[in-house]
Length: 265
Image (cartoon, rainbow, N blue to C red; front, side):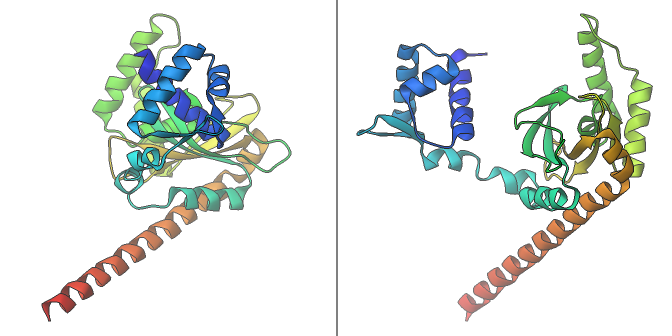
């Protein structure tokens, strides 16, 4: 990976975590960059318009140009569904840790995490990467792929396993994916941490290139006892968000039609 490109994203992720102005020294110390490299990088980002600097304090902060880079993605990828609203709804109903994950090669990356509110809850962070084939969210993602796509991923996973690791049986993976499609969710225990369980539910996406899944995880006995209720909570959240999205789209279309007709007369 090109080091300068990697560092740009590390800086952005740092500000996402800290959510405040940072000096060059704070950035360099947090990311273990040499002082000279930090200064050159931040000056370049300021010059490009993606960061601003307070001349009085010499502290940096991302500009609105950063948000504009990806503000089109939710409507293009999430099929108009309010992902944050769905996750919040599921979290309120279950009190467990709720996540939204997207496929990342042979893994899935957690792009949204709402921590559980039980005294003992599953602790995950946004950006966490989990295996694709041996987790609930990963299997929910795999269930959305065509069989030939799954076969190619299994082939690549086994090529890596030849260098150390457990090989996958394609027939088993395909059978599990079919079961998830029929049942509506994947259910795994102890896949990431001992004495834990999780269910993964496919999340509707506009773009097939970015299959996603909602995950709900917690202590094994709670997930085992409440799996069906958790799945219903996810279904309810998705159905409500989809209805709101459709209603909003219909209202927008009606307004556009009314405006167009007014112009004709």
